[in-house]
Length: 209
Length: 222
Image (cartoon, rainbow over all chains, first blue to last red; front, top):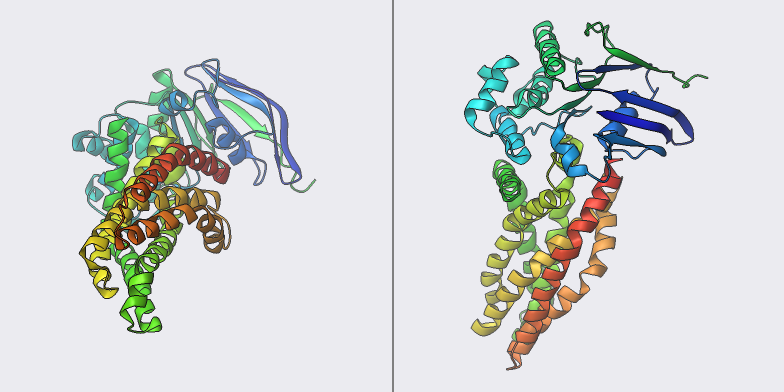
């Protein structure tokens, strides 16, 4: 279970949000909406433990994530603004390194299985530098199809730069994750086609207020 | 945990291999800086013998700082640094792996390159042996201390100059004992005390630096 209690985030001298509470049970999906500058990315980075909130705490399975970073990290798959894909490594090397670092199955077979799900199997031995933006995004999303599935997914604009087919695969992955009792938190600008029981959080933009 | 450490070392060595130019440039930088000194000072052998060790150490110091600027910067820019910190492995393991890989492609080749350079300063066989041992024991401390500076200035504009200003004063002990070991050998004394202190400096920074680096990285990522 993911809980956020009384979160407040101040960037510069602008208060993005305060008194924000979130509670997500296994199998739930949260879609965070809001205009540019409303604080969507900041909220996701706070939930991932990359940014410390001005006030408030984030709990995972009832424990403060800043105290249990290692346990939290192994339960979390984060796809941020930046893909975290190395240009000088091949697609396969990127995926296998990440699996090895996380201590999950780093074999070529399981990496290829992830690539097939995202339609990248023909690019396994291509340097990531030569991929298009959308293909790089798919390599980043491959960390969602690893053998040892993370229980919590935090996805920042995961649909950006993806083509229709890849969007379809991502929806399928999200549905599987929810069905398996996982939690998904995501932001998206496009109209999203999430399951009907997905929660929605609107961050009000005070950018022009 | 060992598997994660090896994975990070393997990845960084592979990246260094793919960007060979960067590694070769650092080594060339070291060689060129050292070569400039005899050209400037002139061919007086007694003078060269006296300044040889110090020159090699200063050049090694500069070369390690030049190369450290890129230790975290590239991973920071493409998001792989935040992925590594969220991997569920202790962040210090990731940091130690990266520094070890960095030392293997800079500190180690510099230590070996010092052998032909000693001929240029007419250091003699015994002093050369001491200098190589001192570099081998001392360059890990340079990498570790420099990495703290690199982590602190990550993402800052003009970070390169700032790293130099932050790191150079902290490496003074390495420089003193590194050059001192060679002086002792040349004077017919045992360099053991200086070498032990160099090893101690490396071990001490290995114990403290990862903690400081992880904290600095977390602040830089915010």
